[in-house]
Length: 339
Image 1 (tube, helix red, strand yellow):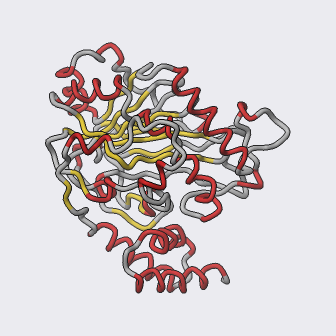
Image 2 (cartoon, helix red, strand yellow):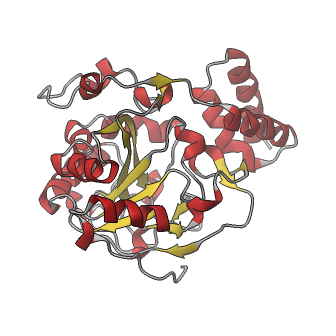
Image 3 (tube, helix red, strand yellow):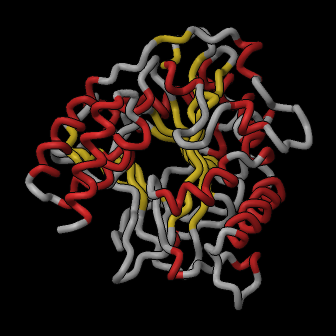
């Protein structure tokens, strides 16, 4: 495992908006301890672990609260056997309320100097332990190509404690100053990996429940491998000034999780539902040029039998609006799976 230095702790600046902005501008990230109460995070963890256990993701001979993974169930986004369980986790109402917690909103309002818009769409990840038979570690990437719209900032939090060996996040401090970097087809977020040398200095650290990492949408980041026997759960939500435009793809649920009406089915309370309507967001189309480039490369690679293209091909099948592209991707997936 990489031996990177620790994050610079910005907890002492938590109430100083200008100082937080200055550090974000300089380093591209902030690390803040205890942003949310540990008990709030641990309550969400208990809910998600119960759903993971019901889906067969946890070993049956250990207490659910230990979060010990069932190696035979190891899977990843966007595989259907992953999505079958994940939909229930992503729709959890207490999970959704984390990104609109008053402490989170107040912090971003201080950073922006105005009201913050938490993106309706957010990411919840479940990373099985690394093994000889399974290795899915979020690769090196930037968020801007996936998020679009105005400059946004991610809030990444593990759902529970997360020492380095459990798959802590790492960022390349200062990399945001290099802008959007060239990508290639890979197994990282959105089926893209960065294709050029990484600028900046890698830093990481251990998280306790409630600690948070905030970083700009062009700050290069990745996860460390999960070397424990537990499932590593996390969530990351994006925030931007409410006065700035947001891409349309951030206004809908996570891909494969249905409509908002379906997500809210079964919630016990309406608190937090459709909160963005009160903010009257300015919605614009996502710049899809990065995806179009990825897809063209993935099709070419799959035609040549390159298994590296498989994750991108799966994403085209699951998420592309073009029936023609989805059908081509299905044919190529069948070919890859019979090699």
